[in-house]
Image (cartoon, rainbow, N blue to C red; front, top):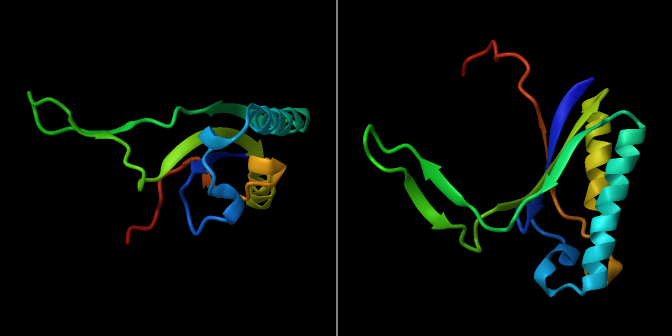
Length: 137
């Protein structure tokens, strides 16, 4: 088993599908409820298979912060601009293969959006670093 982080991008990633372009803020309350219920079913299905580790939705706001030297305040870029990639949430799974991680991510990508259509949004699949790379480029 290997752990993977599934990052649910909000208006980010490679070219968006048309069904993923309408922001959640414009969905009906029923569409939001249907989306959240789908996400819960995915988590429940993964838990039944023994593959679910954790998941959390994230607020659409955030700030990039970096160290700027000893005794100096942190540097921030302010709230995310609309053109930046935003992570809407994440799920950690523990599966037998990267193929199974991709299968789970594809299923997660089919979450319903506006009009009940599958969002087909990008899900980034990242393995957890379990050992340091041996090759230096």
